[in-house]
Amino acid sequence: MRLGERIDLVMKEQGKKQADISRATGIGSGQISYIVTGRTRDPAISYIVKIAEALNVSLDFLAGRDMKKIHYSDEFKQRVFDAMDKMTDAGKHNVAENADFQLAKNPIKDSGLSDTHRGGAQSVQDNPISKAVGA
Image 1 (cartoon, rainbow, N blue to C red):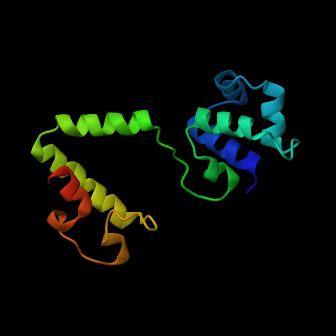
Image 2 (cartoon, rainbow, N blue to C red; image 1 turned 180 degrees about the vertical axis):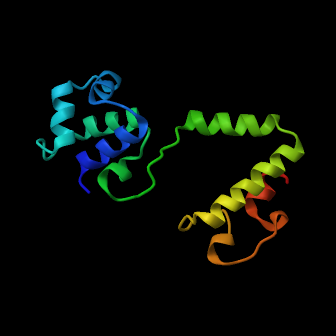
């Protein structure tokens, strides 16, 4: 899948139009169209960075190097940690169990977070995520 197809895929998933991306990035709508349709074969990296940010996807995803689409900003990560700090111990435990389940269901290569995706059966208490949140 080429760059423009990946951009188009994410735009459709998010219900966004080329005009939305143009407004969000400051890139002309004609240039966005050329990138999406492949008429621009080698777009400027500054354009691709802006498009990735507008779509909240990683540059690696757009380049076809990584299937993980989502790029989490430092601000988003901080909001998650702040929310965790406000949770009760039971809430933290539930989040840790959900994270363990998701990692077992959707393995991440070399995440260092959980051995469950490598076939190891860890209890919630033995899992690094659970330990990190004090569950």
